[in-house]
Length: 319
Image (cartoon, rainbow, N blue to C red; front, side):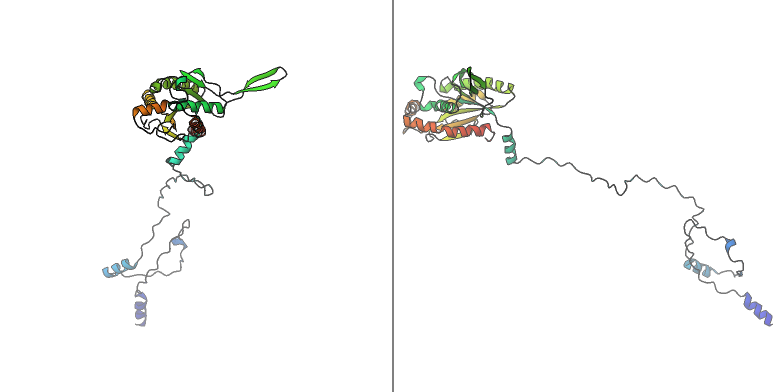
């Protein structure tokens, strides 16, 4: 009996131990085969499990990792070429639009285009009868400026009277004086005086400007037209600068030029001649056509300094 009870105790199956999670097999290391196990480990027999035990075991048993050694590993997808770390990629730059031109910058660009050659036209009435009258104040000023700048005397040209810079340089030697070209003048100006009546002076101005501009551009330069004229109602000797589109203020000579030149841009430099006490047409006509006194002419000639300053501003692109 003792032997029977002992055999019954030995053959009774022990409770199923809680499973030990299988360790993940390191890559490139083969798991142990059954041959590598200890052959002396006794085998035990187990009784069939009930459905409840099976469900309980499945619930507490972790999934077995797949055998990756025998599975076909897909070929790795090609990776894009990357630059080494010591050669970082250059940052992508975006081109910025050019900055908008401010009025100050536009004025600076405009001034950088100068200096311009100038055709300085004075308008008035021709002949000795009208010389040194208020209405011919423009002629008085161009005469004064040309003389101060040592220009050549006025001679026929460009459908009127022309005075240009005198660049001749005289040098003395044993054989006498020799003349040579002194190079370009400081101010590339050409003075022109109208030889027609004031009220129709636009025709001559247009002809002179067309021919002169052709010559200037043939020499590789750009030019501007300036008209010097008298201005009634302004104080004697006062200088003002306006552009071509400004009102003529009843000046018939300016009206004639505006009609002839149309959309051409040009500049005006006016010099005040005062005004008569009466505004009647007859009184105004007598006032502008009378000879100036010595004092009045002196005041007018002194305004040549202001006229030259205005001309240089126009030539340098500042106006």
